[in-house]
Image 1: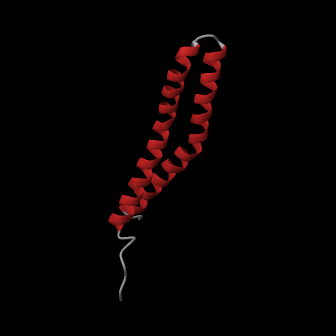
Image 2: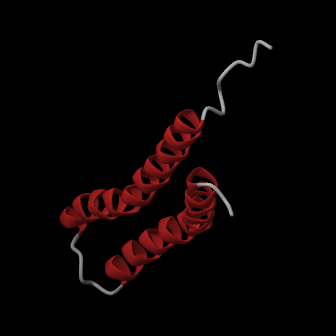
Image 3: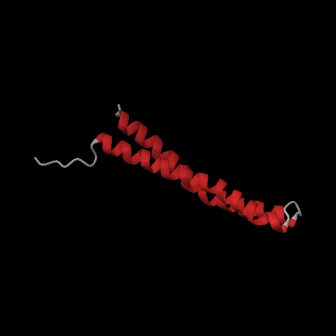
Length: 88
């Protein structure tokens, strides 16, 4: 069967692929939400910048998740010996 590193590596790569595909969707959702809130009169002009920052921070949580997955994949590769020199 597949080794521990292969099984978990595949899971991390699949999660990473999903996260990367989701990134543009999340940024677009934040952009659309700001537009809807502003146009709908739910956000005043003075609140606009604060709301924009909050929506940007929410979208950035997805960037953080991608970075976390990349680091997990790197960790798994290091532990599996993928970067070991083979001086035979």
